[in-house]
Length: 162
Image (cartoon, rainbow, N blue to C red; front, side, top):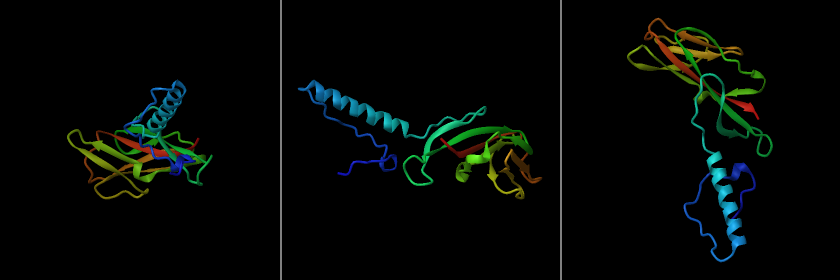
């Protein structure tokens, strides 16, 4: 069996059983250390399910955009509430940022039903609520044919240098 040598080769699978030695305290201590490291590594490689309005939080995901090794980047996530068309300052430093488009989305309500807000370009889509991101703002466009917006959230995830 090949032993993983980098984080890229590691899969966060935690085996369900482990045989601990019962006749040698040094071997037992070593196996306890290995078991703890395995558990900590698997727990730390999960996606963190925290979504916050006031500040960015780490998602727990790591990106190796330039190969393995020391070039690790992580993604951050933040929720931005909105109540209609307009601009929301995001405060994200665009010098070391890449957006993760499939995880940049929004939802809103008209007070009765919930709908999806579409990550798009600066051109609105007929009958839809859309948004795009500039270097300073999230810009929300509400087409005249879209349901009225009473409240909603835009979720942005972006990659940032660790």
